[in-house]
Length: 91
Image (cartoon, rainbow, N blue to C red):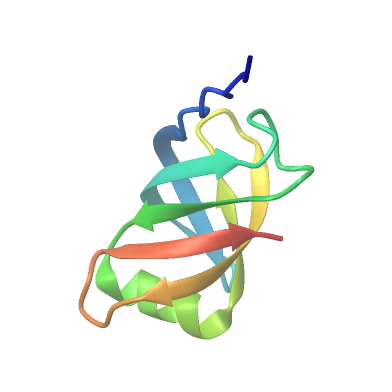
């Protein structure tokens, strides 16, 4: 008898993206590898103004503050020019 794991749903909410000393509001979705926290890594997406996402992609690493105050170090790994969504990996 094989057991299958039920995939954990991503955590979504409103947060802030910190970049170069400023923070701006974003919507986020993050999926933690262990289903609970960032210790084992994870990935996700953020929705925000195009200019902010462009700068975050070019900077590479920035801070994502979740709605409960948890701060994650993230690396923006994909962003389409002119789009309002970027994708990241946890550091």
